[in-house]
Length: 256
Image 1 (cartoon, one colour):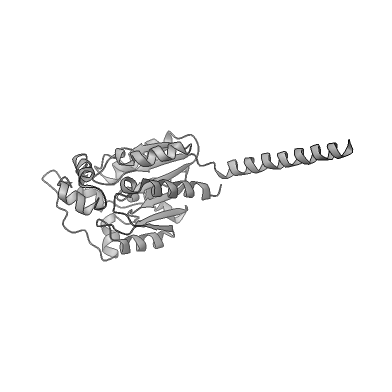
Image 2: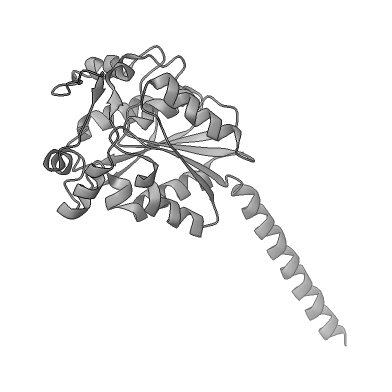
């Protein structure tokens, strides 16, 4: 009888330890809100595959629809989404969206930043300032009479943005591309959120839009944890599993 009682007590102790372990893991995983910010020549639908993968993991995911009319307008659109989140947020930006999250990421509920082949200006810098500092000036991007820069030529979109995607898929993306106001690149970030918040950077090694060497410099200056994958600029479309895995990893590694 004593032997049976001891076994029952041992089993109860093991179960109690398991409960505490699960509770501890749950506390470590309390970033459940992911906000995704697209870049120039794209829209929120570019995140569809990544969104589905993150939702399957239990995250609440929101893709911002940037107007791409100015840095100020895109930051405001992102801040409106951030205000609707219940709980802490991991903020993710692709390409131009990196400049947006660098400013919008100062919101109190943002606990970490993920950059995907993204621009990450310093405080008081514009994107133009940042690229000039890195000796990588913006060339070959001419605004139309409305002050907008387009990338609606399918062949050019395929070459610059989506060189690892099939032609038919790149053509679909080009059809949905959204132009960006040229003036946005000259607007300055007031306070770079990466100075005060942890960041991760996905460096895309086959990128024809933002050179990998430039991405590396941006990531290192921001003090970001760097992950490298053999992807074009549109990594969320061509490598959604890798992108979702990085976002998930970042969410689990944010200290609360």
